[in-house]
Length: 216
Ligand code: FE
Image (cartoon, rainbow, N blue to C red):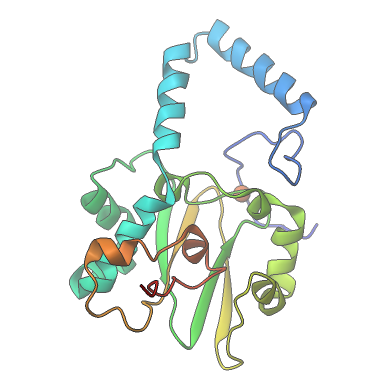
């Protein structure tokens, strides 16, 4: 077994989504059967599911980008974020993370680059940046990012200098990670909102840098 650590899955994976993120007919049928059974047993109701879907869809990388922009502009906030990510994020975004797993923010520097993955399934900081892209859940990413991270990052267009170490951070159902990318050069004069606009989803996963400001 390649993965021997304890790992509770937060979702039931019957059959992974295909490369385009579409669920198989089998997994859709099983999802429907399980959902109807849980509703019939009174575990939850339609309204609870609707609320949960709305909550999930309200979480997007724009939230993570706001956290990064604040950390770039406020050293005190950054220190708090790195020390106690959940509390710092709840405070800034006014969201409740009580029911989400532990959350840690890992800082990228010129010497050390972090990239997140879940080697077993699809654990991801959904509460802060929404649902993961299809490639994050692919068997190829989950295995290759561990065995040949520098090459995989190069394929994403991120060619790191040889003296930058790479740390692959493996998420679990108990702890999720969010990357704090480096602040791009030439952004000293930008407002916090303008900085947040430079922070794309991939930079929060660690497969890209935060973007440079667009030249106008
Ligand atoms: Fe997982």
